[in-house]
Length: 370
Image (tube, rainbow, N blue to C red; front, side, top):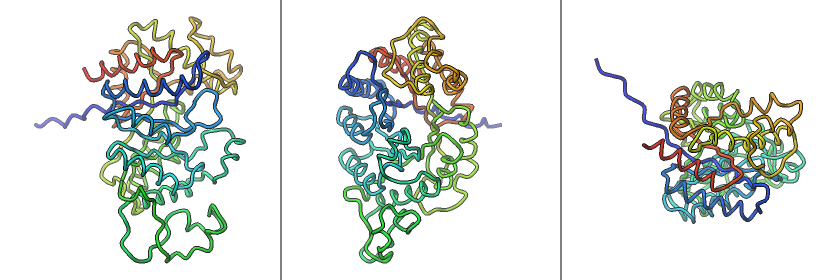
C-alpha cells in the first residue's frame, strides 16, 4: 500500500511593520529595516513582506511601495511583497503603475498583497481621501489591478475595467461617469505584462471569501486576529474557485499564508524577556497609548499598565505567539503549519534592540532549514 505524499515544508518569510524603538530615531528604524532585509536575504527567507500603517508613532511603514523599492535594491534574491497595500487608500491604477515599475526593475521578485482595512484611525483615513472598504468594492478594485497588470491589450476598443464601471454609486470621481465603456482601455505603463504574484490579505471571513472567489492566494493576519484565523482559512478553502471571475488567479489549488508572532533567543528565559517588548507594543495599541517600542522588562505583567481594563483583548490578540529557543519555536511553527495546512509562514518579531531582532530571525532560519 502506497504512503500518502508528504507535504513539503512551508516557506518561511519575514513580516516587517518597520517599528521604531524608544531612544532611537526614525532614520535609524528605516536603516534597521535595510539591515534586517539583508540578513533575511542571506538566511534564506522566501519573502519580505512590508505592511502599511498611517499616522503611527510605532510603525513607519506608511509609504509601503517606497520601502519595497529600498529592500529590493539592498538585497539580491529575496522576493518582496506588500503586506499589504490597503485599497481604500489608493487608486488601483496608481498601485498598478508603482508595483509594475518595481516588477519591471526586479522581474520575478515582486508580490502584491492587497487589503481592505484603512490601516489607521478614522481621522487619518478621512485625510487619505480615497473610498469605501466594503468587500464588493474591494473585489472590483482587485479585478481592475489584475487587468492593468495583465498582458498588453490588442488594438481596438476595450471596456474600462473595475471600479470605473461602478458609476455614480462608487466612482472615485464624478468625471468617471462620463467615460464611454467602449473607449480605449486604461493602461498601466509600466506594469502591463509584469504579472506579479497577487495575494489577498485579511483578518476575517470577508477577505477570505474575496480571495477564494477570485482564486487568489490568501494571507491571514493571525498575528493580531488569531481567534478568527481558522474560520477565515476554512472559509477561503470552501469558496476557492467556486465562482469564475475571469481574474487569471491561481485557480489550481488554494494557497494560504499566516502571520505568527515569534521571539527566538539562545535561551527560553532570554526569549521571554525580549518578548515583553512585543506584549507592551500590543497593549499600547489596544489601550490607545501608542508609542515607540519599549525596552524589555523582567516583569511579565508590566504590559498591563498600557491597557487597563482591556487586558483580555491584548491576550487574545497575542495568543498566537511562539517564544523560546530556535529548535523549540521551529517545531511549534511546523505543528501550526500542519494544523492549518499552510504554504507560507510570515514571522513577526518585535525587539527593542534591532540587532537582537535580526538575531531572532537568523536563529529561526537556521533551525528551520537544518
